[in-house]
Length: 352
Image (cartoon, rainbow, N blue to C red; front, side):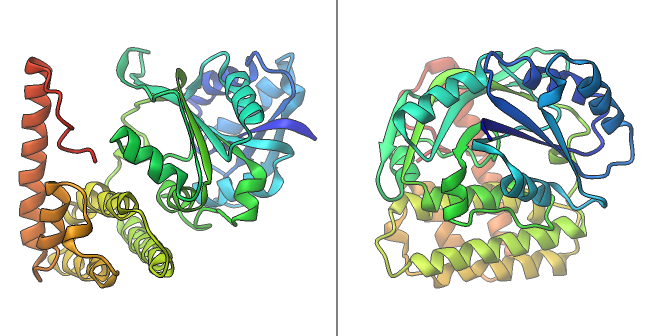
């Protein structure tokens, strides 16, 4: 047993994994393991891992689980949940970089405050290490049912749906059966939605703990293919089913907005604007109209933007919502430009 497991799926990252793995090995924390899930890529990534394991003074803390065949990032994260020896679990992508004190800082908080998860601030950096964007969270603890929804409402910002950045109490994940879709390479949306539903305590801290390396060949920058299209549909149906199961309870308005926001800002962008036939786009749109059967109405939504989007969703042709999407993007850009020059203090157009 150890205190923390850092889980790193490995798949075709031979150019980046050395720097990433070394940032995990060189932590100022002592009692932890690094769980490598070999997802059977076609390059020399695992050769790099094995060399570091053999030569680094801390190489003995690296443990490798072999997937035998490629199963995708979702399965790799589930493997980590099932096999982690630490009481707390930290997901890390194999091309990103941890700050030196990341694990110690998050561990001290999660142990002392006894919360389900703790999230550090982060920054996006270029391949050359230039900081492109910083995301600084407030120092805040929120507890109770739908704790993350309360956090979103208080801060007027949406919860980042990344599996990384956060340290989780492993018992919290296992007791609520929070997992990724096992066969998906799009692992974050469903996993993080479950965390939003079930977490009863969260702490965010303002110190930057994680560096997202923005590389052009990253999976998030690739076109959506047919397998991704099917996964998006499956994720949407699963999330809608979870929402439908909660409709007999008191659901925070923020939760429904969050559910709608992910659909609008992610799925429409990747699918409705993707390289698919009109028939496929229309089918996808017809499927996501299932959200209209939930026990909500336009008056329950927060903000003019989401009220308008919800009304547009009642139209039968996806081209109308696509047009609204373009108008929305233009309005958001106008807001950001005005805010840059005039320092507007009202709530951002894209926020709660």
